[in-house]
Image (spheres, rainbow, N blue to C red):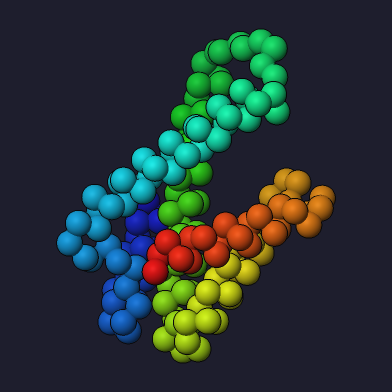
Length: 146
């Protein structure tokens, strides 16, 4: 609920100043739902591939009510984090950077910011590889947004 109120108040400001997040465009909610679906399918496919290629071994599965509640509680939180990250970085920061400093800065800086907000994720600082992958992922998202 807090997200919706913050989103509502910020989009009023952003739209008045020319940096809307895009939800006012026709068909934007349909694209939003499709994007959530594509993201979920990508995550599921990645997990299945890691399992099939031997990166993870499942030795036993014990499902109880506490596990199901934890899963049902955690997945919407992850979705909300992804929406806020993308709305902030792609919807706002990238637009402001492009208007203020031009397209080259709007490619590099949001990608660097995207990588840096993941610095506190578990394992992200054990080597340079996770940060490079996150930066490249950020570049990919910048080009998808354009």
